[in-house]
Amino acid sequence: MAPQRFPLLKSILLTALLGMTAGCPATEDATLIDQLPAWSDPQGQPLSPQQQTRTEQALSGWLTNYMKGEYTVTAQRYFLTRKDFTTWNAVEKLVGNYVEQDLGGTQERYSWHDPGIDLVAVWKVGDDPRRIAVAMTKEPLTDGRRLIGYFELTKK
Image (tube, rainbow, N blue to C red; front, side, top):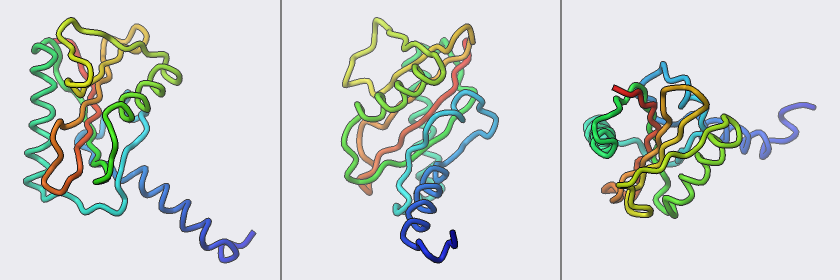
């Protein structure tokens, strides 16, 4: 089958593939979080380097505080949502389904967690001492999008 014969299909597949790799990796060594499905907005403009760094640091710092300082962020990946993105529930469900079904993980519950308010979820995968966490900014960025972070956590 010649590629020229199906230009629309080729364009859709290329857009999908590019969209899956359009995240903003902050660390390349993450073995657990590299397996997670990516979120992306292939048509969105990237953040300025300063805004990207500031927003990533704020989300990572918030997660460290949320985990009561018991874990260190050892790997992280970031993605921007679309402006019309719906809810945290979609993020938690997509990542949770993948971690639980494909990686055999179980979600951990913390006594301080406030569902729907704390936009974070944490999973343990088998006997691995590391944890997978996903978090999202509570407020939209100035352009209306939100930042989603995938984190690999190691107990201190």
